[in-house]
Length: 200
Image (cartoon, rainbow, N blue to C red; front, side, top):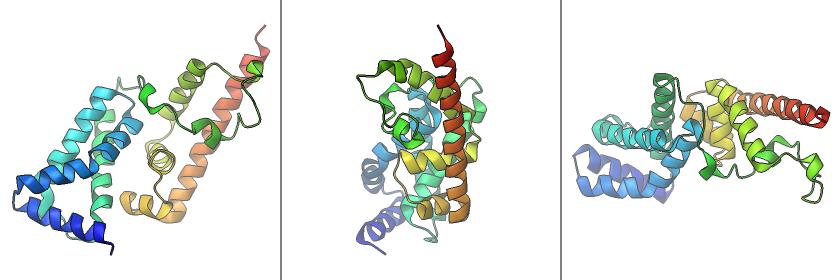
């Protein structure tokens, strides 16, 4: 076990004893990545902040239940994913809008549809806003399991093994979910491109 994991476990033990300083340090260590995960899954700034706060509240409240069967980071991500999905299910109006801060990073490259195009060929590319719109729609339509696996892999850069530990499933299952998510996104991107090319 690495030094980071050992130190995280030390913080969790202290938090289980209601050590506020330890809790503050854990929040500082993970708040950026956890908020990013929640925002990637939910797509709404305020709801992502709520989910992140709920995540850390649950960590503080249940630190004593951590048994060390997984890394602390895995346990924290698992809580964040569950809190995010619960919030999405609770608020049916959440449709993955207003997620521009993500910048969508390399999602076009990941889907492998726009490779080969260049800025000098605008007729072969959709405008940035159009890209965001149909990608948001496509991501929102993915089943929860596929969306979570895809987000943790492509936006949080976690390995399939790390994701499998977070989700409590096999590495093969994670890889299959990511693959199916990519296939679904590819189909939707191609459909939009085809429609765009057919418009006068």
